Image (cartoon, rainbow, N blue to C red; front, side):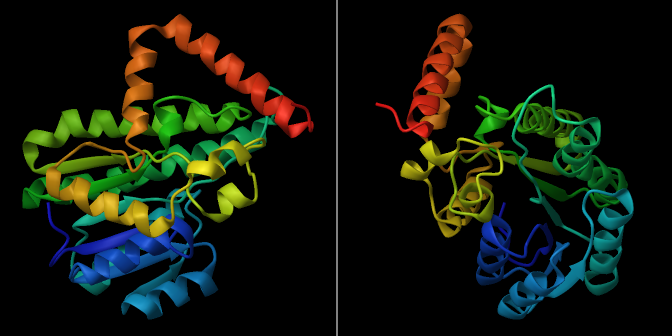
Length: 262
């Protein structure tokens, strides 16, 4: 798939990966790019950069997702590519309050569901359309220090798989973007605890956007800006117990480092 001539929606496009995707899609010749974000000022900056449209939207609600899609349809006629990129991280485990579990579930998972609910019928009718789901390597592996992030990213990946299987023969393409650390506010603000260990191999958002374009052209469901994630995933599948032991060791190492030990 090529982005040239496509109408695109990018959620969470005010900064980070979303902004990089919008820029790259514009350079690739997208017919139109709409940026949706709660950060209206940031969305406008991105839109001005790419000659696109900015919409202030709460992607943690179905109304917000539909508002972004409605605005794109009014501007472009229809949406060819929907990039469900908005996401948040939360530190903690089972003790995280229900309201916070619901908030991260809505943004990291349900926003993908709501987009598909609104767009799939039209895509089927046209015989074409695509979804890019920003999942994270945590959807294939896990996120130490954050049960909510791990759980929602696994769910997002599962939904992307379901979309690909269910509608792949009806012209709908689905891509799951699964990077490890990326130099974004989420990583720098340590939204899910001891994530500093990801900084060493963190990529610039523009590198992630490049991997997305390459993944589109190759037609790969899994887009892995960090190629080593594929090997980690293979090891997990090959020997789950060994992988769990290894993750516990990594967790202990991260805790010692965070406490200033050696």
